[in-house]
Length: 278
Image 1 (cartoon, one colour):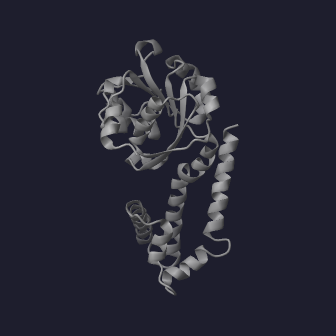
Image 2 (cartoon, rainbow, N blue to C red):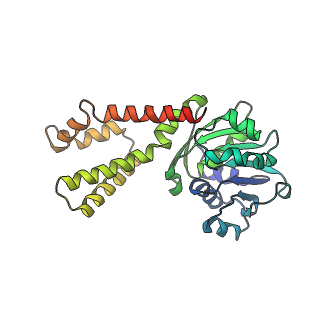
């Protein structure tokens, strides 16, 4: 794990850092970089539809849509455009990339091979998730062959400003990563929706059921985050033999229960990720 002081030191990069795509995830990265002390004048954003938040960063010195020849040495290009827009954007982005330029992609389903073919450079492929917006994301990254230890450290520092980072050595794992952590927040939000709906079905007022479900999921997630215990142990600690929780878990853990549903859901997302990468 990279500690805070090392991350801040690495944020003092040499050259210009280019962010292509400044939507929710790209904007979260930019916010994190500047919060870690990166000089705004060392950042250039390529975004044809910049939000008011991004334009506020421009007022602090961030460059917006500069010509390729106007920014000097490029330290790294971070690609955060929508995957379906990448082919259209690639020809412009390639102008910023030399043979040894670090290229970090957070686009779902876009392979290292596709990135190399379109942009060139030393490619790191990463999969963040939406809690990055509050600095509580989890990102998994894989480096192409030829990426140096220094480039990997830079990529790690850039990604770590929005949460934890894990590295894998096999790009084939990224489809399952996408299915578990990339898509995972949607599963948790669905659980919250359905817990609230079930509360209403059991007789609770809708607003109270929604608050109970939301705060229970959020609080349980924070407990899991802070605890040294694994999820199974925390579940067991809530469950008294023959009690109300045990009655509910007998349904959730029974035949065709949550285990089977989650296995099928993650398998479906993994398969779709593989299809999108073709």
